[in-house]
Length: 521
Image (cartoon, rainbow, N blue to C red; front, side):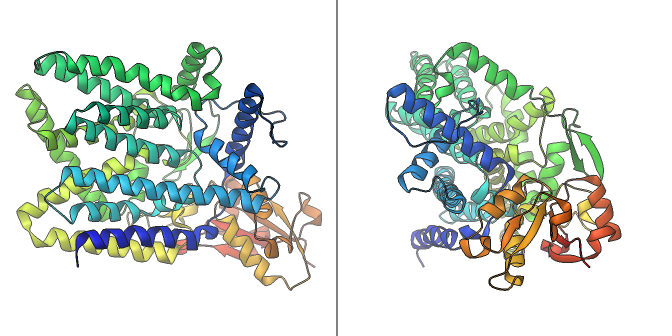
């Protein structure tokens, strides 16, 4: 069958399949916060421009220090679809937007791989399938309202940069300016895209010394044009632009979060994390077959780059240049986080945006091995993708707590942060609703906010059966995602109410969410 037809069917299947399962994924900690940021922004813009708007949730809320283009669109859709007062509908709008945007990212990644391997017809589809069949990335593509929006636009801006480096036309530069501005409108770590673009242009002009000064002119146009195009969708910067932008960058690099994260059984302060924190999370949550080819690709590209630098040029042709750019855009942010000792949250979701670059390097490693060993790299990668797909189906819709086979043995819950964002509450609550007879209700004590928000956002039939009850002595059940150390200890001993499970979500056999009976007679 023609590879283009298969590629079309692949993307059609993604969009249809995503729509079929979008309701399976739950609500996370950040979604309510980000929604309020969007309401504040839309109300501010509408008031500044003299536009009428319905009452929005803005009381006591302030501006977010990063671009709000995603939340602006989501809020406008809420208003247009009359969903402002319906949590089930306004969160569903965002989840549909999320998976559609990830589909767009997959399309651009496919185009990126076609730039790199124009004569290897199947490589682009293989690489795109690997990106899709990455468990944690897949789950976050439905419910992550900020880190994965950055992944989408960072990936698009990477494509436009690589396309510009190939064509060098003004049209390609204009498209890259637009993509860079959109990326900066999601999260400020996207600043590495303008930094890389400027570095490449200045390197070529000053080191390679081409005729004329076209690259200097392009650099002089690119940076201010990107910043100016960023501003319309970044209302926080409309007033006192310079100091606010400086403050936002400073806050990003030195964010204060006085809390602890769990890795290998060690409780680590979020502001004093070891250098291995991010590499370790990537290593244990990436399928092992993928990890092997990634390391091969990274190693080969590093060796090729340093060998070229020794000769005075880090790349020999456009394809080598693509590899070097992807290496910098994927490894660079990780190194920056390590060098700056940045404050990090649970897991590595805040750096998911580097993952497509790592998949690109995976394909570099695969191509290297395939040329040398022919058939067995194809067999290894195909089996790795098949096993990963089977695991994703088995874990559905809890792929966000996937670990590879490096992690086994002792209870994972006691050694690693599991469903810290609370996305799994939805599945647990739906199972509980199925157990409650029609016409009856049960009261649930939620241990944290995501549980409450998931109750509010249940489909109407399930929502009618479950009441959020903040008082222990009046609740029938307690629901938890085990954020507290004492809960992780008690569940291991099946102490107190943990001896009376009503629902337990345990993808791969590792408990991540539980609902337990309390106040029983």
